[in-house]
Amino acid sequence: MNPALPLTVSPRIAPLFRLQYEAAQEAWVLLYPEGMVRLNTPAAEILRRCDGQRDVAAIIADLEQCFQQSGLADDVQAFLGHAGERGWLV
View 1 (spheres, one colour):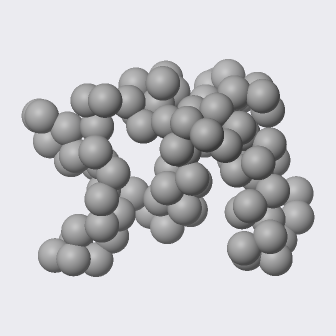
View 2 (cartoon, one colour):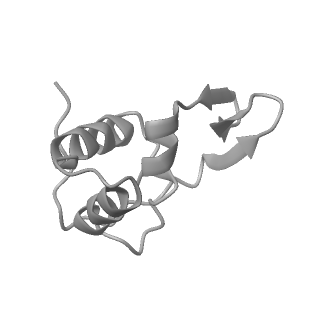
View 3 (cartoon, rainbow, N blue to C red):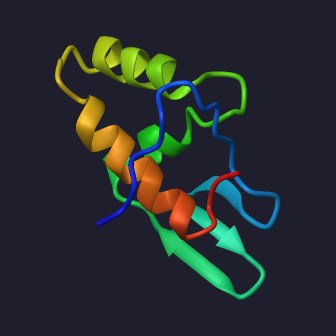
């Protein structure tokens, strides 16, 4: 089980990775020197908001507002914890 990221942390993409949209893949991807991770839409929407400025609470609020959905906190925090364990975030 992945540890959830606390609400007060402001995650950003780790310097080793670059988040970008790949037209050929028709998806957002994380590029790194040895390869690429193709992201599903929810993962991409979360990671696109990891700019080091917004904390986890702000990311959740933005996602809930953009997608007019509530109760996303547990899923977003769990995903961010998973992404942190994989080294995608600092």
